[in-house]
Length: 312
Ligand SMILES: NC(=O)C1=CN([C@@H]2O[C@H](COP(=O)(O)OP(=O)(O)OC[C@H]3O[C@@H](n4cnc5c(N)ncnc54)[C@H](OP(=O)(O)O)[C@@H]3O)[C@@H](O)[C@H]2O)C=CC1
Ligand SMILES: CC1=C(/C=C/C(C)=C/C=C/C(C)=C/C=O)C(C)(C)CCC1
Image (cartoon, rainbow, N blue to C red; front, top):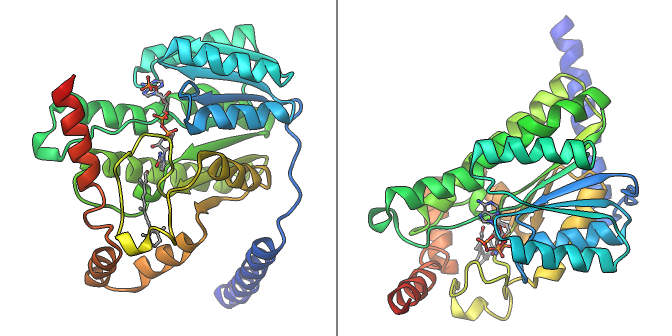
């Protein structure tokens, strides 16, 4: 009897969730304020990258920014742009793939700035070589930067967020955290892993009823930041699905983050791809990838990387 009552309640809640999601789809809920938040962004240095743009968006909304990157010069440039928007900013050179560097820098942040309440795990790398041509060191670097780094930053900052029942963990994953393609095996493995980590963490927070700590998974398709220069799908789809402008991608992501959206796929057509992936047999996915040209979309990217490496 108890199970039956639970099941009826569950059904009602599921219907409620679906209606809520549909309403959100049509009418975005209002943004939360981040004025008094301390927001840490990893991988904030790249001139055309998503990290710098996230920093500027948070700065515009009055958050205090903590910027981490392996590239000290680029990070300083981001800090200057953040300051120009009137926000407080602290830049740290940190290699997020190195556990001890993360813990040491996190301690400095706590001493010099305070407790981080918004963590945007954005730093990412790709080896740019198919698995059999890739050195072991490059493979490890991808896993350490794109996945392990999230373990260390979360271990460093989540306990305080949980204690305060206030905070937000944002994971920048990507299309290749949900779907895979050839020749970027290291990247897909690291992104799938970090999606698993993010989901497990989100479940843990829910199970413990720590509802004040939010989580958001951001999954964009190809963005014109330079990271995947050369990547291209079927030519006829170019007009329909040109690479995202970094500014548009970050603006869309910000809207979702600030309305505590759990998962953000950019563009929205990706939601259908996610549903169909779980609905249809594997061979259908292979056919769809082939039809769209996603099966070989990384070939020109790899070729460009090879010729770049050959000339340097
Ligand atoms: N561009 C795209 O098409 C997509 C990107 N993404 C993801 O978005 C995120 C941002 O990517 P994007 O802006 O394009 O990439 P960028 O290469 O422009 O920016 C990444 C930044 O992370 C820094 N970084 C790399 N390794 C480390 C490290 N070990 N410690 C600290 N900082 C590091 C880079 O420094 P340096 O330049 O010195 O290496 C760079 O400043 C990544 O996680 C990426 O996987 C997701 C979907 C699509
Ligand atoms: C063609 C096509 C798509 C393109 C996907 C691509 C090209 C993704 C590239 C992603 C990258 C580079 C991610 C990095 O993390 C969509 C949007 C799935 C929708 C269906 C048609």
